[in-house]
Amino acid sequence: MKKARPRRIGLFGGTFDPVHIGHLRSAVEMVEQFAFDELRLMPNARPPHRGTPQVSAAQRLAMVELAVAGVAPLVVDDRELKRDKPSYTIDTLESLRGELDERDQLFLLVGWDAFCGLPTWHRWEELLEHCHVVVLQRPDADSEPPEDLRDLLAARSVADPKAMTGPAGQITFVWQTPLAVSATQIRQLLSQGRSARFLVPDAVLNYIEAHALYQAPH
Image 1 (cartoon, rainbow, N blue to C red):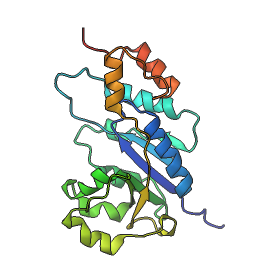
Image 2: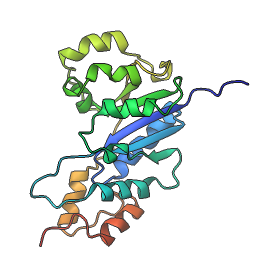
Image 3: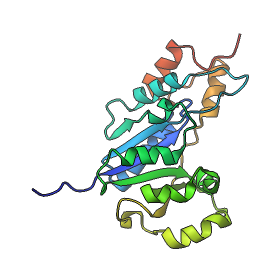
């Protein structure tokens, strides 16, 4: 019996506080560019911010689930919220690898700023043993990567994203012009009693309104 071809799975993490059309548009573009069989949106756990209205992890998760419902191949993976210890990407990758065929390709999508901060990540040198890294570059991201990353880039960079091979181990850069939308901007609008319509999917907006999220403290 012929083995099924390796699956291509993208991982897109974020606090998603709240998830918005910028996240979703970026996800759809990545699915098209990389022909992902699945793109998993992974809400991050986060430390509580003092003095700000709290939106629970369960509520952030619910909003992401509403946002991608029926939008194949976008799915939600909540494993980082289920952990009772710090949420490290390396743990997530090891956990995922335990569930996948060893030939399946994993692609970790990170923004330019996050990529430049990679040397501060827990066990960062091991990340490429488990996945490829796709760096989403913005037009304003023309700074140099830190020195710690230069040798890695020299050894592991692939100029053409379509030329990435094997289950893990390579880095590529993708140029993206993101929509000028931010979660901070949306939270500000809502705290001022203004509308966030068309910045988040309708189902997410309905959830925010139903649960009175992001309102100014009374």
